[in-house]
Image (cartoon, rainbow, N blue to C red; front, side, top):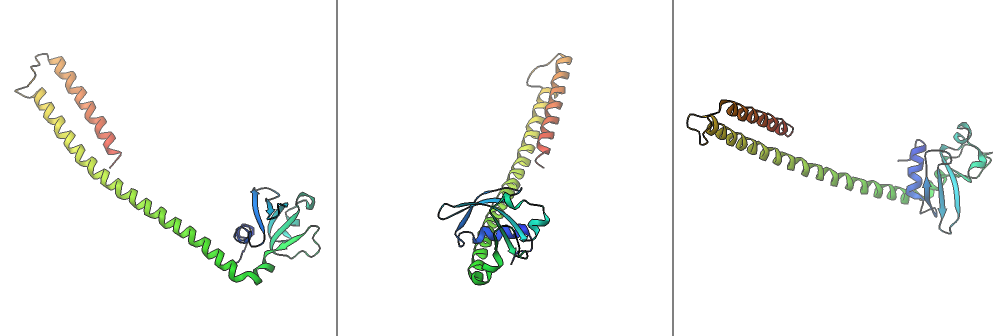
Length: 187
């Protein structure tokens, strides 16, 4: 439940920021990590770390930000103000835990909604595939009837020109191949 790295420290701050009277107004992946603003409109640049001493280990410039927010403060002689979230957590454990559970509940509800939507689309795709299969069979039967009418012993259209009949047959074969290829994408 409690942070084990910098990313989780940032996530915990996001959960408790309003309880601490702050909100993140800007964040980035480079130093400094964020700008936070108080309820009174004060703005501070902050760096997040899991352990406060990691600020020094990462080679950050203390003049480059106003506040270091960490989970554990293990740097007693830090050259900038440090706010350790672990110090706040003991007093606010119940509220923080409730906030984390609420946030997880919101995400769980979103995940369930997305899963439901995905299932609905899978069912729709299955219905479409079944419909396309029926459509394909109907089109193939219609095309076969048309071929028999054109090329059969008693054609509806009198085609005495052998070259013309060959061209019609070639077009018919190409159309069927193209139809088969397009419908195969849905299988």
